[in-house]
Image 1 (cartoon, rainbow over the protein chains, first blue to last red):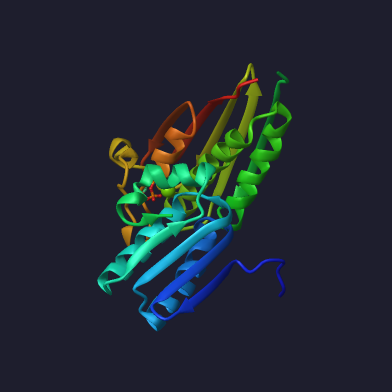
Image 2: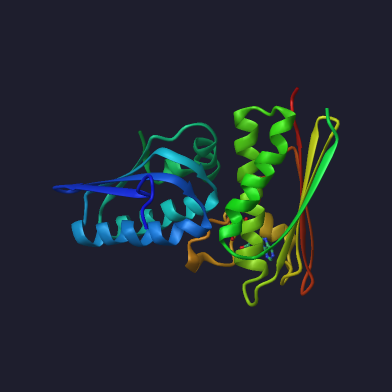
Length: 106
Length: 140
Ligand SMILES: Nc1ncnc2c1ncn2[C@@H]1O[C@H](COP(=O)(O)OP(=O)(O)O)[C@@H](O)[C@H]1O
Ligand SMILES: [Mg+2]
């Protein structure tokens, strides 16, 4: 099946991985995003993982669960989490969750 | 402001998280809400409907009823399930509390619903189900 945009694009370079998320992040979509991101973490063991939300159109607290889970996995491997490209309502959801305590916000 | 109302009944499939928030967003568009208000309402509805799917109807599938009313500058949204109910509503509403940490639930659904609406009430009876009411004032 072809879709207009890929729901996730993962770029890996040396010890850095950047994940470009897009579309809707909700409970329905979170599980497959989690699998894709964890695959990249296991494979590259990155020093920094950037989750880029610039193209995300919708996110509820299922996205927060996704971020918190990746934070735990990454911390256990000694990596650091960066969250970028947030704005508007998504930024406010991040604020409610206190994501700035877990990740550097860019 | 125009008086209007809508009632949707749908099964607890994860696909319907999107259907619910998109439907509410279409319904309220006639009231000329701001982009931020639309996003806030969509997020709150998504939280409530997801809770029915993830928690209320965990053991067996069931139906979710969503009603939306608009009158006098206010939007009333009610989300009802006939699922497992909540034993301790006060604890459930505490930020970061979740009964399903192993599934990466953040425990922030109620916190998000509260901060993105003007009023939230939760009525629940264990074994019978839960009704969440969300009220939001729309500036005109
Ligand atoms: N409709 C519901 N039916 C049964 N339990 C619910 C319902 N909504 C919420 N809960 C309970 O309240 C808790 C907190 O909900 P919430 O703040 O949305 O966090 P999360 O969904 O991430 O667990 C849930 O973990 C669940 O135990
Ligand atoms: Mg929830």
